[in-house]
Length: 72
Image (cartoon, rainbow, N blue to C red; front, side, top):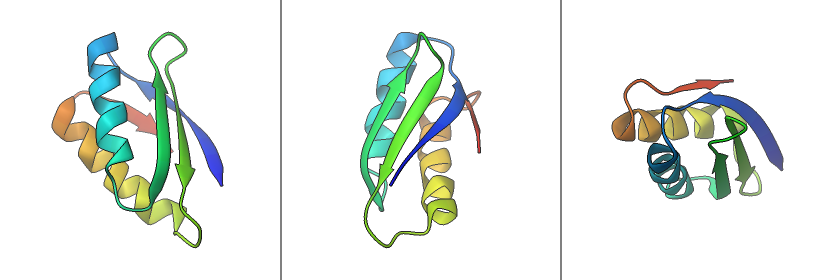
């Protein structure tokens, strides 16, 4: 399952770092962050709870960029 989220990120480098952090989160099959459109696309592994996986993604992204916002 893929879901698109609005994201608020300040720079392209931070977007790349957040993308890497999201991809490493348990339950995430793939993740893409587009700085220009301010969107994050997350593809979840089969059988994962979307809400709990996104909590992990949000925590991982906050470690990279404390000011980032992911609108769930």
